[in-house]
Length: 113
Length: 113
Image 1 (cartoon, rainbow over the protein chains, first blue to last red):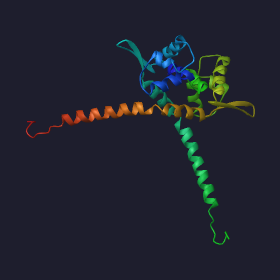
Image 2: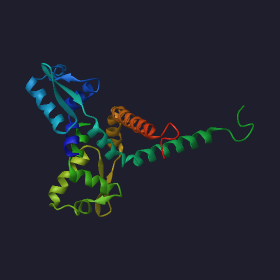
Image 3: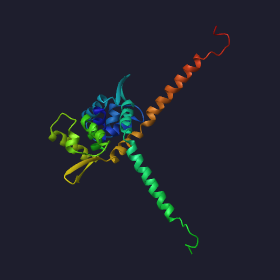
């Protein structure tokens, strides 16, 4: 999990994952949208690979990268244990809004002209 | 998001969050389960604080730390965009298991003694 979260802690690497979520890409294609050398892009790709977030595979004349969703699923699983914190907050907010709504509804006839 | 994922990329910091999910704690209480100096623990706490994952508040004679779930919710939200990758895989797995099950069910009478 350390490698996974470390890999996700960088804007470029998160954008690379986004790109790969649309389909496999060569290293060149993956590096193209970023203003950086192929060497710098390659470093980011290696961090993603080490975390198991992407895999590289040899194809005929080139190597392609593709997304490996397993570690993202594990990260989401880890975050799930905290979910009740925000769902509880949303429940409270919803109740408050409902109470506010209810207090605005006229209870007695003749209150409004 | 860089700060949040960076903060989560460390076992000690993830365990500290786990501790705080059970209730607020002083820095001393938070550092106690870990075999490290108070200074080292304090460094980790600062990383969590910078990422907005925890807050520190002065109480009568001490300062307590408590969990701030907002950034965890954002991290989960970010991961959600990839969710279809593993839910699709689970769907495929479920279909395969069902097909296997169906093929095991005897269709013709007299097959079994």
